[in-house]
Image (tube, rainbow, N blue to C red):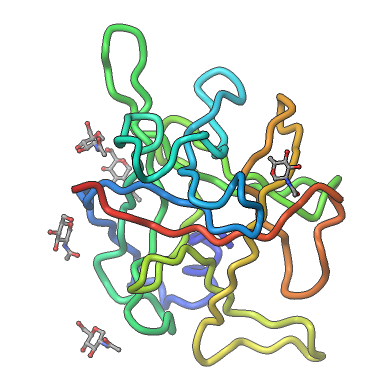
Length: 206
Ligand SMILES: *[C@@H]1O[C@H](CO)[C@@H](O)[C@H](O)[C@H]1NC(C)=O
Ligand SMILES: *[C@@H]1O[C@H](CO)[C@@H](O)[C@H](O)[C@H]1NC(C)=O
Ligand SMILES: *[C@@H]1O[C@H](CO)[C@@H](O)[C@H](O)[C@H]1NC(C)=O
Ligand SMILES: *[C@@H]1O[C@H](CO)[C@@H](O)[C@H](O)[C@H]1NC(C)=O
Ligand SMILES: *[C@@H]1O[C@H](CO)[C@@H](O)[C@H](O)[C@H]1NC(C)=O
């Protein structure tokens, strides 16, 4: 869910969210029943000009952190409305290095398309558009859900539900890759038959 939507729905105008500019870098590791994927870090993978997806990198915890698999999060400075446990919330950022060594912070968005019920996180330069995610204290990445429309009428939840609809799927955002994917909605399975359940675990870079 886009943070802008959440704010529009829940904040009373005065509560514009402000983000911490400098949180500590981390890697993201897959937890999967697939033994090949389990324990691999996610890395930025080319999806277009200055656009990256999140793909299993082939590297594990034993391999050192590198630029392409090191991320950080612009965390909300104010507690986020009805987010349990003071979990951290904000966009993931990956530093794209362009020709000449200039660093361009690139923000993750999760924009759905009508052709699939999975969405692929992608990074693009700048913060004009981004999707926030949350982490539990233990480092599990999730999306908070504030609205349940599996009941009628739809209800706003008193406390956000922590949803971890992560999968690894063979996708074609642009190229044919196994990518980190998110299954939209609270019920149902990915329509993409290649999808395998995954959890995403944050580990700070020492
Ligand atoms: C902002 O991030 C820095 C670096 O991670 C951290 O030391 C600081 O506590 C954070 N500030 C707030 C208000 O969360
Ligand atoms: C990314 O770039 C920003 C701006 O140059 C810098 O402040 C930040 O420390 C960098 N983060 C990482 C993880 O390299
Ligand atoms: C595990 O994942 C790899 C990479 O996506 C895939 O090629 C392989 O078929 C998967 N193995 C099983 C047992 O599903
Ligand atoms: C969340 O943070 C607020 C403000 O810092 C604090 O008063 C509250 O006790 C915290 N709640 C939890 C569950 O940690
Ligand atoms: C976006 O980037 C600009 C310029 O670096 C900064 O002033 C602004 O606070 C950022 N916005 C967010 C939501 O991080």
